[in-house]
Image (cartoon, rainbow, N blue to C red; front, side, top):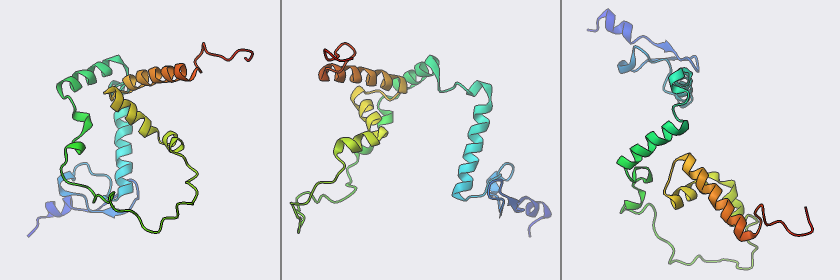
Length: 170
């Protein structure tokens, strides 16, 4: 038989986000304030993040040269960690259908209006990932420096740099 004390601990609570009653997880009775719904878990994470950032010692935790040095030291000790294990996997995620030619293709149809370069610029994560892959760096400061170098190189190649203005124009 349960004691009064154990029944009292399992009492239902009101979620701080959706305001509905829920039964807290027995392992988190002391401090659980949100129910298990996805939107409430998101609100809980946002509140934790606000509390963490409100502490003066945490405000610049991810900024500045000290953080860059800290991350560089960690990455030196853990080489290749951020690349993940995806390429080493032996199991295929989907069947290879490249040898099979699709039937009933009308080859006279017009191409999709969006060209590859249009899709490329709409997806900033693609550009950041490409620069990180080419440079071997994942720190924002390193990616920014590499990006600036790539832009200057591209301007030089295209003749659009600051010193390459067309004659007769502004």
